[in-house]
Image (tube, rainbow, N blue to C red; front, top):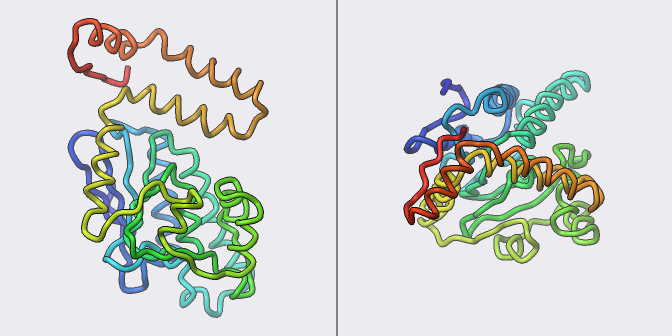
Length: 263
């Protein structure tokens, strides 16, 4: 795994990658370099996951997951410079969406603007109970441009998304859980243990099966039901003639834990 200027990467065990947004002095806000680092990270996993079967994405410190774009760096940018930076962010978002292995957001603190949009793009999210969330872009003369107007309504519904986006008002972790943005709210000090426990369960499952299931869910939701079912069975059939499928059935019959190799 590469070394990055704005990210910390740590491999836990054989198959779990922990990625930490590491600009705590500015609330882990995304500057151009972080955008480039994240783009390289996600693109690298698309090209070759290696032994990685799951990713945890979190932020440095105990108060802020990500404050969004670095407005201090953006001060004085020309429109062309602003749009060029945002194109880097967009490519990173798209690469995260296409990451073949599951990415779990471990929201260690507040997630505002692009920070919340990143949470929404991850496969699912756990957060500490003190975290707060908001899409604040309309209070700054812009609008969500990291996917928020598309991902949020798909999760919370159109009317709730309009209220969140058009007011820019923050909301708490319990509301985020009730609305489907979070899968679990964790007591302070327990977040990473709970996220890692879930991630390790995923890592123990058949990696090709996990990837195909994730792909089927993600792409199927962009289709009508009939086409989604067709996509699902194509993804399913690719698993039938694999070593892992044979190992899974054999282990079941031999009453032992399967050893999956991703083949």
